[in-house]
Length: 344
Image 1 (cartoon, rainbow, N blue to C red):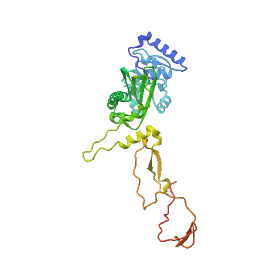
Image 2: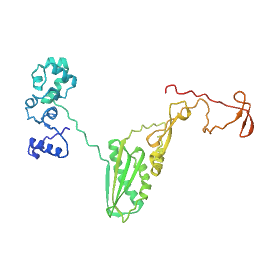
Image 3: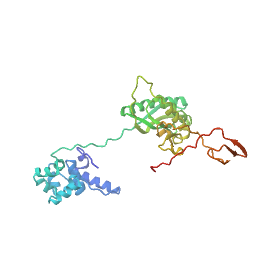
Image 4: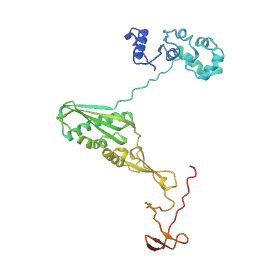
């Protein structure tokens, strides 16, 4: 873990006091840690991995000199080669002529040394906190009618969808929390078949859940949060073709609200010439429809259980008995020869 404490060490009584306080807090949490502090990320990393302490400003070489060359964040092969040459510490490496080392090990070795000593700057890219997609609304007077709750939810959706549009994302799971005046809260969860951020499409999908809410003596606070978001791809508009319809996705969502999205399923083709293996059933909310390849010849939609017949002669038999009735063959198709999957 890398922390930038520039301008904040005095709040803990100095750098040494800050390190002691950090060690004690982490050890009380059951964590065994090694902490290093320096002007550069490379110096702090070396001290934390190969010896604790503080590298004073402008004295990085004095603090890092006794440490092994592995403290420079080098590859294992480079560390082994340096040790074979007798260069085991950072001080020995710093006293060695740079040109021969650069020719043998490349510029990366000198770059790591200069970064640790502060000669060459090193960019630090901290992990930004992911955006939080949540909005709330406090009402001056409690509401209890379904139409009023839906109207307030629509106002929250407008704000939430604008925030998601700024980040290029769409909601996949939404959670609406309704706070009653008696401090009781009820949640309405909406799971969408596709990520979306269109308030006009999302709002009607809340109707069923909101209709089942017990408002009690009234609702005075609402909170809407996008619990799960996904990148929403941009749609290229074609002036020759109408935009694709979203009715199927909305239908899947409406049915999924009632029975669960995992129970709304579709058939997808599978590369197999055996009929019973030529398809797979998957949840429709996490898949896209794919066209089935055309069969080489017409095939029945339903295969009924085979029944015994009594016949003699070549295939197909000209006459046979079925269910104690004598039948005459006028026309016959098949049987189709299906080869096994040789690649299995």
